[in-house]
Amino acid sequence: MASSSSSEEEEDQKLAQIAHHVNEMLVLLGEDPTRDGLLKTPSRVAKSMRFLTSGMNRPASEVVNDALFAETSDEMVLVRDIDIFSLCEHHMLPFMGKVHVAYVPNGQVIGLSKLARIAELFGRRLQVQERLTAQIANALQEALAPRGVAVVMECTHMCMAMRGVQKTGATTISSCMLGDFKGDARLRSELLQLIGMPSLSHRSGSHGVSMSATSSSSSSSSSSSCAPPPPTRTRTARVPSFPTKAPTAKM
Image (cartoon, rainbow, N blue to C red):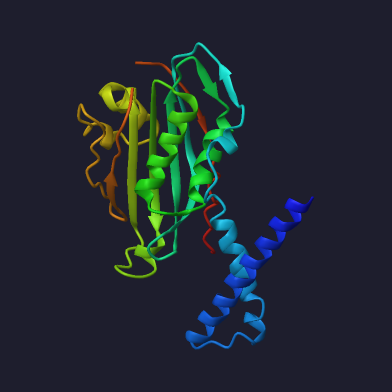
C-alpha cells in the first residue's frame, strides 16, 4: 500500500510540474491562461503527454506475458493494417498510419493481439519511424525466436504536413526484415503482395527489401529498412476498417 501511494504522489508531482511549464509556455506564446478556454489546458496537456509517452521504460515482456504457445506450423503469420500512433521526437508532433507485422514460427506462436500491443507499447514513446519499426521487429524476435520477422510501416507525419514543407500527401514507408525475411526474396515478395505493395515486391533485392520511393497523383513516399539475425503458405489476420459512406448529391 505504501509503495502504491508513493508512486501516485510521484505521478501527481510530475503532472503538476508539466502543467506548470505548459502554463508558462502559453504565456510566452502571448496567450492568457486564465481565460475560460485555457483554464484547464495545462493539466489536460500534462495528462495527455503522460499517456502518449506511457510506453517509455516499459519492456515488451510486460505486454507479451505468457501468451506463447507450442505450435508445429511453419507458415507465415501476418497481422496487417494495425493502427499506429506516435510522437515525432524532433517536434513532438504526431505521426500515424498502419503497421504490418509478420513472422514465421519456429516451434511456437504468439497471441495475435500481442503483435498490436507490442506496436502500441513502442508507439507510446518519443520516436522516429525508423527506430519504431526496428524496435517492434526486434522485440518480437527476442520474445518468440521465430525463423523470421518482418515489420512494414506506412505513416503520415504532421511535422511535414502542418509545418516545414507542408506536404499533406506524403507517406513514409519503413521496414525491418530479420531472419528468413531478410534472406529469402520469395518470402519477402509474398509478404509485400499480401500487404498490398506489389510494386515494392518487384524491386526487392536478394539482401533485404530495397524500397524505392513510389508516388501516385496524390502522394509521395520515402522508405528505409533495417537489419540483424537467423516458402510458405500463409495465415493472415486483418484489423478491419470500415469505409465511410459517400455523400449523396443533392438534386
